[in-house]
Length: 280
Image (cartoon, rainbow, N blue to C red; front, side, top):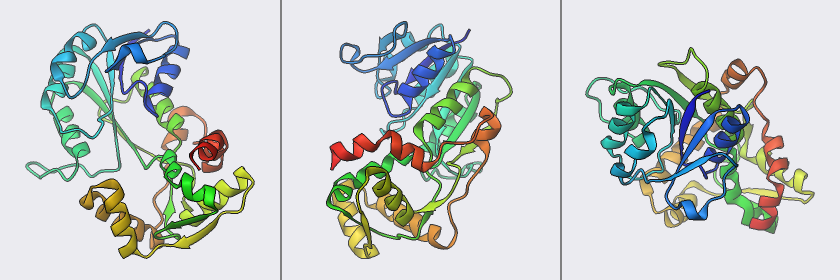
């Protein structure tokens, strides 16, 4: 059985990858910043390390067969990929729906830059390019609790993916053959509008939740103040606007890889109903 280093092992996806790998009988080494504060399944080897400090990575990556790499949005550090490629045979990188860069083309996101570093590192690689997570809708929890969600582009159709589907795909790719050089775009099984998402959340919680379209200019001001990243806000607004006329694409990649359909948004809400109640 393979020995896998999991970065972000306590995160939304990482914790499910750890569970999937251990359930499959694989050895798991978890990279965490504060080992004394984490609780992971029995048998998981917990090591201290931080992607922001590449020198801490070498002891963690020595002796593993593969690495699950996620990037927490910190500045890109080339020594991370260099260290992984020096000691591991395979890396699976959790990316997003980005275009491949042409030779010499400037990266528009850290995902593109890290993908490029991995492609040229010499290590065997697979990119799991996940559409936005369903868990991002927990950002509406306070509004859900008040019975009214004000957000831009209610008719934008999204194909949000369950974090456990991301984890299952990553675990499968890490521990089976035939995925070298693959770029897997994974989505939920359907594209549903923001309005429909809110309706489903309300139905599952057993409460009436109304939708009100927030004008883009007001949304820009509010989200920039909340997220403190104007370019990211602008990119989100542009994407949501595009999904009104052209719904976010849906792929069958999860089903092809795992032999079962991707989990629905309703099933995700049912699993996270208490999170909405606690956040409201």
